[in-house]
Amino acid sequence: MKPISLTRFLIEEQHAGFINADLRLLIEVVARACKTISTAISKGELGGVLGGAGTGNIQGEAQQKLDVLSNEIFLEANEWGGHLAGLASEEMEHSHPIPNAYPKGNYLLLFDPLDGSSNIDVNITVGTIFSVLRCPDGITEPEDEHFLQPGSAQVCAGYASYGPSTMLVLTTGRGTHGFTLDREQGSFVMTKRDMKIPDETKEFSVNSSNQRFWETPMQTYVDDMLKGKEGPRGRDFNMRWIASMVADVHRIMTRGGIFSYPLDSKCRDKGGKLRLMYEANPMSFLIEQAGGAASTGRMRMMDVQPTGLHQRVPVFMGSKTEVETAVKYHLEFDAKNA
Ligand code: AHG
Ligand code: MN
Ligand code: MN
Image (cartoon, rainbow, N blue to C red):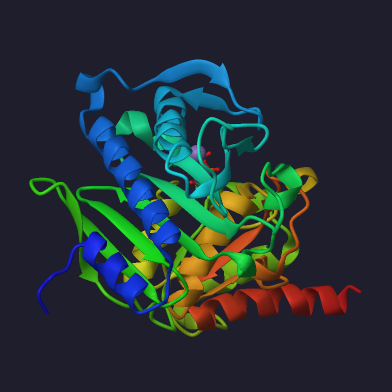
């Protein structure tokens, strides 16, 4: 197969009637913003973009310079194109309606401009995650409540992974496709059509320093994997944790595995660690479109009815059979303790 560019892929999807011109433009603009972020990141220390910004976001997290810069890049790129009605970001307390000076479109864009911030200063892969929803009919100045749609309502989701090469992984509901940035050409080129996550896995991804804070079913689930061949799972497992959701999920997207950030007693009051609207939901859409599964441990992620822009959830996603196994541990425990 002759490699095709993201632009050609999107135009062909439009001609075939699967996406409209506005969504195509939106994805092109997002891809361009990701290229700009990629360029800034790849300069590293030379670009003067490393280190803390000296500010905090609404979630009480210290912002890195690149968190702030990436957020600005996304806002600036997406405001004036006429394809959006509003934006929402991890780095902004409230959603941002498109100013009246610009034409408005029918889509809402949610994003985590820089995912895995703790890895920026140590030159390890970080990413960007985004999710696209329709603006409800008749709304021209969307407010936070208009963004609170379940993951199943997403029309598009994707992430950029800023690793040894920069990749854009995308779905519009017709499979999950991977594009690699050709820096000389300045364009994303399709390198993986219809990604498929292996059903079974021997690899799990979790921050096990939180083990003593986990719920009992999670403790049992991981204990059973650690028992290996001699344990109830009957095989040895490997473990990987990069602490960039994008990088961990990208590995799973490529070779299978299960990614989890479960509920623990430290984050219980907040509902979890990872955010539903711009982390869990877009990743779940991509994972499901690649044949995998995504759950809170108790229900399908994309069926969760959101109640807040920055709502947090427990996350289990990846190889279908393995996610189902993790869910089984939780549901059986709940049933016994009901
Ligand atoms: P962000 O940098 O956007 O705040 O997200 C970081 C997230 C996620 O990418 C990663 O999986 C997780 O936080 C890492 O958490 P720990 O540092 O607790 O391992
Ligand atoms: Mn994140
Ligand atoms: Mn972030």
